[in-house]
Amino acid sequence: MCVEVSSADAVAAARATFGTINKRAAGTSGTLALDLLKPQPDRRS
Image (tube, rainbow, N blue to C red; front, side, top):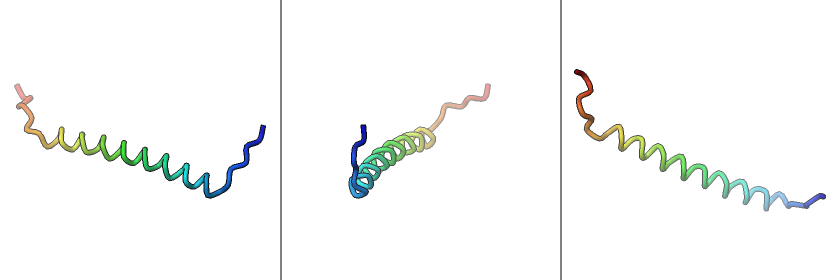
């Protein structure tokens, strides 16, 4: 079964996919940065 996909459709799909991945990555790194910036309890005993 062969489905014809125009290159414009393929580019649009790739952009949408990468956009989603980038948003997720940005959200994750943003959360990590906030966790790192939070004052940490002193772990040394």
